[in-house]
Image 1 (tube, protein in one colour):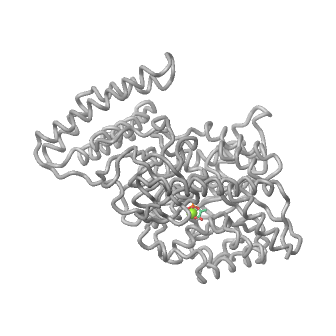
Image 2: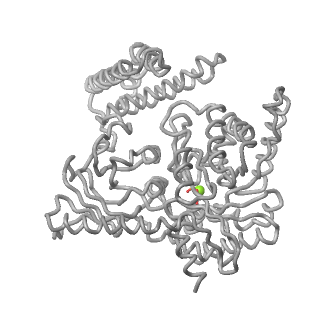
Length: 545
Ligand code: PEP
Ligand code: MG
C-alpha cells in the first residue's frame, strides 16, 4: 500500500477515489506591476477572452431568452471604450496592476449608476460588477466556474472552496473536494456535509504540486489524500468505500422512525437547508420540518438581487414541502465567509466581527425590507417561523420589530383582492450565536417567540477562534466548558420565560451532543438532513438503555 500521503483536516466524512480536477489556478496573489505597456497588453487579452465567453453564451442561449438580452448588454459594455479607458486610466496614472485598476474603476461606475434615479440605469451597476469579476478572473487566467464545467467524475482540487461554489457542486460528478485553506466549521464544509461529498481541507501547497487528471484516493475519515496510489491502496479503499455506503444504507430505516427522549418527550428532528432542492431531499431523509433555511444562498453566485417575488415563490415552496412541520427561515446572513457580488461589502480586517447578518441588513434596509415582505406574503402557506442572525442586543430586536410591523401595514393597505389578504403573521425569533446575546437571554426573551442557538458561531466567538482558519482549528472546541455553560444558560432562560429553544448549529447533528441537548430539555434539533438517521439511532439506543 502507498505510504506517501498528504494530510489535512477531515471536514466531511467519506471515502473517495477519482481523478483530480483543478478549479482555478495556483496563482492566488495579485502580480506585481511591471510596466504600463505590459498591463495594457494583459488587459486587452482579458477583455478579448471575456468577449469570447460572452459571445459563446449568446450563441448558446435560445432566441428570445431573457439571458441572451443580458449577455448582449454585457457585450455592449465590454465594447464601450469609456469603460476600458476608465480602467486604463488607473493603470496609467496610479501605476497599479490591472486587477487593482478593474476593482477601482468598477467601484466608480457602480457608485455612479447606483445614484441614478432611473431604475434601468441603477440595474446597470450589477452588470458592471458582473463584468468586472469576469475580467478579473480572466486576468488571473482562471476558467469560468459553472456547475456545467464539471461533466465527469472527479475530485475537486481548489485553493479555497467558496460557499457559492460549494452550494452548486454537481453531486453526480464531484466525488470529493480537497483544498488548501478552510476549516471544518466554514460554510463550505457545512455545505459539503449537507451534500454528503467527502472533504479534506487545509492541505498546504496543494495546487503547486498537483496536476489535473492525477489519480487520487481520499480518506476523509482521517484527512489523508493519496496521490497516484498503488493498486493495493486502490483495492483497499474500494472495499472501505463499499462498507461506508452499506452503513449509510443500513441507517435508512431510522429516517422516518419516531424517536423520543428517555422521559418520553417528543423530539423535533429538523433540517438545515439552503434552498428548495434541499427541502425536498430533507423530507425524504426524515426531517419533519426546517430548523434553519440559510437564505443568503439565494443571493450568492449572482450579480443581481433575488426579487421580492422570486423569494416569495421559494419560501412558499419550502413551506408547502412541510405542510405539517414548522419551517424556520433565517433572514439574510451575508458577511464573514459568505459574500455575494450583488451585495458588495468593503474589505474589512475582521469580517466575522464586522458588517455581518443583521448589521448588514440594517445597512441595506432596502434589501432587508424586500425579504421581510416576501416572508410576510408567504406566511399563509404553512407554519412559518422567521429568525434574525447575529443579534447582540435588545435595541436590534426592537428595530427589527418596527421594520416588520411597518412592512406588514404596507402589505395590509395594498392587499385589495381577498386572495392577497392573509394575516401576515410569523413566529418571531432570533439566533443566539454571539456570547453577549447568550448572556442577556432573559432580557431578549421578553421580545421574542423563540431562540435558535447557532453553535457554530457561538463556539467561534466564545473561544475566539476564526471558524475558517485551519491553523487554529484544534482550539475550535464545540464542547468547551465555556460554550456548554452558555448553552445551558440559554436553554434554562427559554424554559423560565416560556420561549421555545432549538439548536441549529452543527452541534445538534453530532449524536453525543444531540443527546446532551435532549438531556437538558432542548428538544428541537436542526441539522444537516443526512445526519438525522444517525442521530435518531443514537438517541433511541441511549433512551432504551
Ligand atoms: C451557527 O452559527 O451555528 C449557524 C447555524 O449559522 P451559520 O453556520 O450559517 O453561521
Ligand atoms: Mg451563524
